[in-house]
Length: 262
Image (cartoon, rainbow, N blue to C red; front, side, top):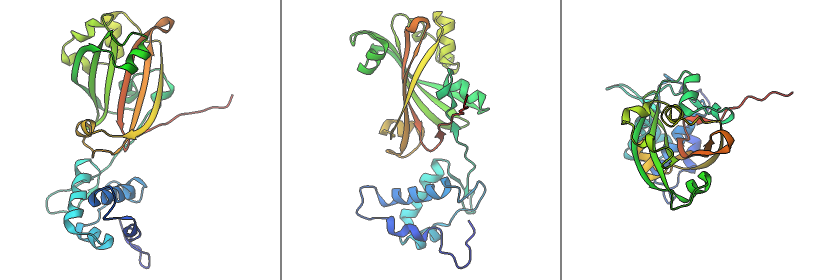
């Protein structure tokens, strides 16, 4: 970022918001300040970033604190740095959640947006249905479900963790598939191996924070902002097929809709 003569440094106004006695560690507060400057469009991809000395001076904090905040930004993909050179802002692209208004899977949405993606199956089991899943699938809590936990990547970045619950034994075949099969769309697998076609869905979005376990999977700090998508899919006649609980990186996803007046 280029300083404009006669104008205050972009970081100087944030000095007063940093608190040593706040619940959040100081380095974490600094990290939020630096992310804010990038997210608000004040810095573009390829721009040189502030030096650690410059940040420490303008915010009135120690170099070790700045170093820790910078490391987090590098790990999360906000910045990149080559040996011996100043860090630069990394090109980042938001993923628009257009599938909120269309009956398509998350993978199909990414393909429509021309985003390279892949899915990794982390865990699966046949287990008792959690209360929320039992309610949405219209089964008793004592009933069994096929549980899948998958991690989705956009490019090289982990973007979403999703837990899916499918009634057992209707979808027992899904539990027997090889791990590599889950690189395919789940709706496609359900149709191919269980002869069930998804015909409807409802989805709702909640604002929350990344949990400790999800923070490790999504490579962000614990308690970072997170979008949580909950919902169910249905076959013909409104028969429940799947209950899902997805957690998305709040710094990478936006909700987008297109409305027309009739």
